[in-house]
Structure formats: structure tokens, C-alpha cells
Image (tube, rainbow over all chains, first blue to last red; front, side, top):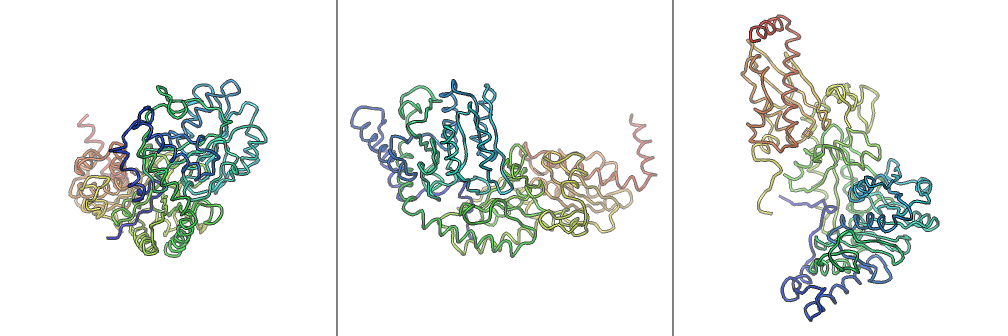
Length: 421
Length: 142
Ligand code: FES
């Protein structure tokens, strides 16, 4: 069976160059960078190199603006809580978009319980914020604006440069979550006008266990972990040295290979979507059309009349690894909040599958995926009462309405006696 | 990858991959369609009843792997049962026969129980003489 990995947004394999660079730091170069002897100093030097490599990837001026954390989630927590606590006396208001990653949203919810307030800027049907809404949301009490560069779910590329200009004009620091874009799209912190930027090397062929937070020297931030003076006192705890070293090498290679990787995945993205939409009726793409508004690696699909977990499982049993934002897949039994925020019909959110491409995917992988996925859809539709009821005109399609029958959501509410969320 | 890891146990996976009794019964004696309030999924069970017993049961499901496996197992289990026996069918039987479901997926087996009961109610509604019998029996047990 062919194995096709189409979940690069969850993680990527470590490059052999990266792995080789990491190895000595598990064994002979095991020192703690806080130590003052040879073992410590050698490792300290390696961290500096990694900082320079990370700084180069995002065009930061100096490696001193780079902090290492354990992952993207910790970076987001530090960015939000660290800035909020540092500026408590200035004001207790935050602005975020409605489709931020849960690490941002839940950090904000945590602060709201402690007296902060937050304005969530809504997004349109493709997931874009409206810059006028962003401007209107900022008040004299606002201490931070948080916006993602690329949406982790639907691939929307936000107008971060324009957002940066608004923030600069109003004197509020901007934090840009670049987890879904770093290594795939060019990032320039100055062009973004970003005071803080976070990303994770395991999304671009580096190891897990390291996250990066860029902080412009002018942005005030306090540590949310206590017990040490690592990372200039902003992040206590012994550094994960092998992962940091590996992450640095991954960043260096990503910067070099970025144009080739983007071009390759963009071509596959087009081939995959063209193939799926010609082979499968009643399928739609969520988020912007592939092009300048959408990252080259992501396709977020809704296939009507069938549920996402079944699609995911059958893909997996056929060697294809994908993700889903269906409520059946989540432990909370709620659809992805991003799909909710773009106003996607519940029926379509239930049929959600996310495919994310990587540099090693091939055209043959894509063709196999299109062919296999079409079979899976046919199989699941054959089992679905909704497909049947659509054929009979009892319910209508959301994607291509015929004007016959009631909506799926109405039908689901009728048979369950409760509106679906 | 040499080993295959699965989200559910082998029995659940088997029923999901090769569901039993999938489909509709054209001249069904009872049909029940229910939705899960928790996740918004839908299950439909149709029954053929002969001599007071379930002669055939079929399902159609819009739902997760557990829901499909639960409907496959539930339709297997209830075939041959009398209406009264089927009326006291519980989702726990499905869960046990499947060798367990993850806690968050128990509601999917409840959906199978509810779809079956809805189908039985539909049948009883079409046969008021049975409804009378049922009430009389309940009166006796009570
Ligand atoms: S039916 Fe939705 S979680 Fe199982």
C-alpha cells in the first residue's frame, strides 16, 4: 500500500542533516548552558548559532531577540500572558481575531477570568479579518493585538503588514503567530511591524520540543515560568539543547529551500484540488482559493452528506494521513472553532477534512489520494441516510442547492429534537 | 510502517470497515431515524417484522466510525428477537459486543439504541393492537 502523509500541519519528519546536528548534544556535548565550565560554554555557543539561524528565518535584526520555549503553544502563552502582565498598569484590554489558535484563545480566556477584557475581531467567510474592524477594536487600554499570519485550519493569509501599520500608528504592540507559515512563506518581522512573532521548527522539518518567540527589544514582557534566569530571565527552565540546535539547522535549510518548497507544494495543492473537485460532486474548499490569499500547503475540504471521522479513518486504512475538524473527531464534540467563525453550515463542518502538503509529496501521491478519496466518499455516501434523502428531495444540498427539500441542519434538528451546534 | 495502529479496537474497526446490514429495507414494517444532540449525527434503522419477531434489520448512518460500527453491531444483535425483547435493548449490549468504545464515543451506541426504539415505535404505531397489548403487559409488570 502507498503511504501518503498529508498532515504536515500537525508535524513533519526531521531532516537527516538536522538529526545529525542534534546527535552530539545528547551525548558528548551534554552540558547545561547555564554552567560556567567548558561543557556549559560549548553548549552556550551552539544556542547562539541556533538563535542566529532562527533570527535569519524571520529577518530579525539580532539573535538577542530570539527566545526558546518548549513549543508553539508555550510561545503563544508567553506572548499573550507575558505582555499582558508586563503592561497591567497601562491597560487590561486585548484584541485577537476570532480564528486564532487555541493556545492564543485560551490564554486570553484565562486572562479574562482575571479581569482583562478582550475584543475578538470577526472574520469573513474566507477567514480574513477586516482592517477597519481591527482598528475600531483598539482602545487606549489595549496592550496587545494578536493575529495569526496563516490560519492553522483553513490556510487564510492575513493582511499582517497592514495590521502592523495600524498597530504602529496607534502605539499597540502586535503579536503575529507564524506557526502555520514559518518555513513556508517569507516572514520579515520589520515588514510585519511585529513586536512579537512565534513559530515551531517541527512544522518545517525540525524536531519537536522547541518553540521560538521573537520579541522586539521595545516590547515589554515578563516571564510566566519561574525558577531560573534562562533566556534573559524571560523563560526559566533548562533549554532543550538538542532540539534547539536541530531547530536552528532546520530554519537555515528552510530559508534556503523556501522558494522551491513553496513552488512544489503550490503545484501539488492545485493538482489535488483540481482532481478532487472534478472527481467528487458536492465537495467544497473552505477558506480562500489557492493563490496569494492562501498558504500553498493547505486544503480544507467539506464533502457533503458524510461525516469527517469516517473519511479520516478510511483514508488512514488506505495509507493516507489527513486531519478533520468534524465534531466527532474532537474530544469536546464541537466542530473546529475556525469553521464556526467563518459561518460554515454544520452539515459541511461535519464533513470536514484537512489535507496539508509537504516537500516530499509527489504527483503520484496526489493522484493516488484523489482516486482513493473519491472511492471513500462513494462508500460513505452509500451508507449515509442523508445522501439517500438528498436523492429523494427530502433534504437539499448546501453546496449546490436544488431548491427541493429542507436543509440538513433543519432535518438534523428535527430528528434529534435539538439544534446542532 | 510495519504495524497498523488503530483508533478503535479490532472489533470496532472490523464493523466500521465491513459493516453488516447496511442499507434500507424497501417494504420495512418500521423505520426510525434519530439524531445525536451531542455531535449532530444521524442514524436510521429499518425493520422487517414477522410473527412478532425481528426478521431483518438494516441501517444507514451519517456519523463517526463508532456510530457506523454501533449500528452494524446493533442490527446484528437484534435480529431474531421479539418486539418485547427488542424494546428493552440497551446500548450497553452494543458496547459490550464491540469490546468497548472510548468514553467520548458511548453516545454513538446510544444513537443505535434510540434508532432501534424509534423503528419499533413506528411499527407499534402502525399496529395499535400491539400497543394495547404492550400497555396491558406493562400494567401486569407494574
Ligand atoms: S456519531 Fe458523532 S461522535 Fe459518534
